[in-house]
Length: 329
Image (cartoon, rainbow, N blue to C red; front, side, top):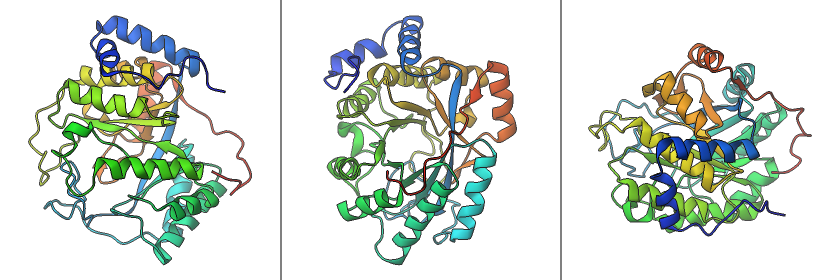
């Protein structure tokens, strides 16, 4: 049964009214909603590993892994199961309760590479962590196989609004992204889907992205909000710096629209002050990525995060007693 506070009929006008409210009012409302559904002093720690890097046929304007852009990213093949196990074990030791695996594919492959990914999912679950993958587009058969291996969540970001999407990506349609999310949901895997701000979009584009996410039924269980990390060689390398308070407004609005979801303060944290991150947590962010890298871009290391949480009097969510491995999605 859905909590009465969950809505899926938000309009663009509703979202604009929330987003543009005076900042103290917006944060107060978001914090009130947050406390009704989540602990206010805890943040989930996730770790993200690039299991196959570079050479992606997509032309996403923000991405250094695109084969269309000349960047310093070195192409690597799919990591071995031993490498994956070592990385996941270290992540658990650093406090991560969710381990995410990203591969630079347009479509998840078939055959041996996909079978290895299934083994990776089983390995992460055996270590007592949630397992998340982002592998590109999936067939229903692949989504079902991932569910059978015990995958907790599948990440497939919408990135931006339908209207602005063609300015950022031309090699995959918005509908194809939504279709993949539907297959993931059909398989019984939780959905992780969010977007990026700072790509030259205006506020109405952000309203459109939030509208797409908040009208999905059910809402994505995980909503990553990324701040663009500018990388030399990509079309967005010279994008104007985004106001951190726009990130705070986006997070607060997402929290109000999707109360039960985890709102993940994702890429771009390295460019934020501790005070800006604190505002993001006040606005309802309750998950971060740990470690020094997010796929191929830099991220604050463990010592900086430990110092931040100590200053804020907050903590990482402790791991729960793991369920039996491969018990389902």
